[in-house]
Image (tube, rainbow, N blue to C red):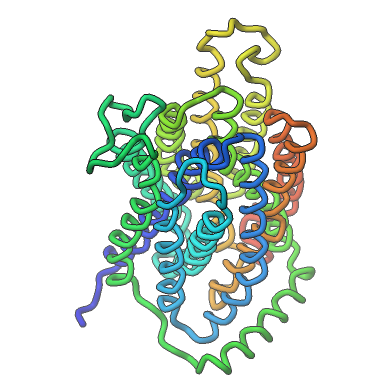
Length: 451
């Protein structure tokens, strides 16, 4: 087999972000989640609570298994077989969402299918992220991570535009450009919107081909049985060493909270807009286009800022922006904007919420790309999949807090506005813990304490 150039390997790796982003963009945030809560469940408040429980439960599975699988993979060597398995879960889980018909009585298995796809997507991400330090010099990983994240946002944007213009119907049965869903899909049974599942599955399957063809894999080091035992032993050693590695420990703890808060925004942004502002799927899609466009731009710019100033500066700045944005969101509804009363037909709440979407996309893109870089600076190169498994554990160990707390607070207060307030606290805790994170990890350098 001919040697694949480094340039192709980098592009193959970045195309995973392109291939996988529609699960976040189309299913979790802008199309399927609002559709499921409003049309399938039929009650936005109940739907928000049910959706929160589902994402939280999936997060528990990811938290338990991620570091174990990562340690196992680092010991055996190859990562692609794992990625193929999790890709199959992604494709099957998302494709099954086609059968989420409006008003169905037993939607439990739809939630199971969504959870399977979500777990597959998260595990595949862990294993592909572990390739990052192998793709270029240490001081280039920030730019590479930012470029990959930006490319992912572009992929999500294109998929979202295709959904809005050709498939997702509004209450009048037409798409954003005023046509009936293509391919003869029936708007009366919401087949255009339901096609988001198969579209997400096919998109991923097609665009993962370059990844499997171009990205190099490590040779097998040991058999699976011995690898599991050795991997678990090494994982235990790593976990025991964390208190003695304060920078890595602080970063994992900080990311545990601020990423949970960010995922809470992504998970419930479209649901919130549907319930509080009465937006249609098309309105939410436009909100998504704005957020994804700013995310792509600022992930790219953030990658350059990361390379120049370091990932910690980018992460802290992004958290401040996100906290301010959530505060604004909570203070916006059809009756008032930032405590100022507005007319019932005023477009000001919509404009402000669109602007919040721009800020969420910008800060969310930069913080996720910079976090991926920060872990590379903190972790041992020889145990990188395990490190990203721990990163997933830190992100999922409390991943149930945001969705479940949003579900609980929404249920207790019967208010979607008050229901999203827990994310402010999570961001604040993450920001506080970043004080102890050093730029070059526990290796330290002369400037790391001040960055």
